Length: 62
Image 1 (tube, helix red, strand yellow):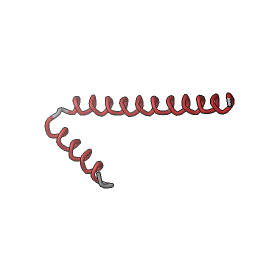
Image 2 (spheres, one colour):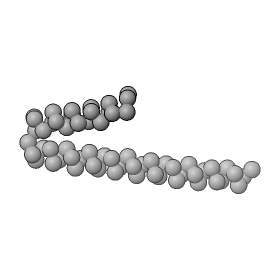
Image 3 (spheres, rainbow, N blue to C red):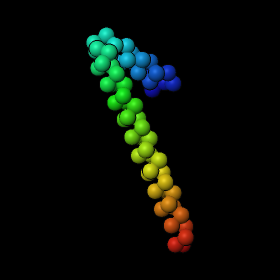
């Protein structure tokens, strides 16, 4: 995907959603995607911390 392709795709999807959903549905979708993003970010941070901890343990055990 080129640099702006993802941005264009997301914008296109958002515009399509506004044409077929009510404001209440859009609010629910927006809140759901924020929660999804936050949950994925939490997962990645937790994984990174665990990986760093395992790296330190491996170095100490050598």
